[in-house]
Length: 115
Ligand code: AMP
Image (tube, rainbow, N blue to C red; front, top):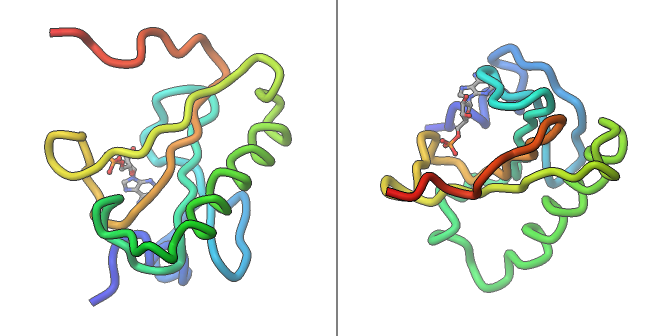
């Protein structure tokens, strides 16, 4: 059964795609938390960081390099930005398909809300 993000990657659900290649796809978050909020998603259906295999290192590196390039094309590379990967329930992960959030275009504030 394919995930929500696989359906987006395959074009079965609409999205605002900004990048894709044979390994990853990037599209704008439907509920943006910053002026730039893009999700970088591997085509491979890895559910969480905890499900990554030892040989997925290059794939994760690719996700970060795509985020770097998108930050440049979005014009936020110089001002700075935040990259986030949430993992499972207490990490705040809602969609069980690995994804990297690229967020910027405003000061992003404290890393987490301290309780
Ligand atoms: P996370 O909480 O880390 O799993 O992040 C999931 C993100 O996916 C949230 O920021 C949602 O706004 C975003 N999202 C959910 N459905 C869609 C969709 N159909 N298109 C784009 N982004 C989505």
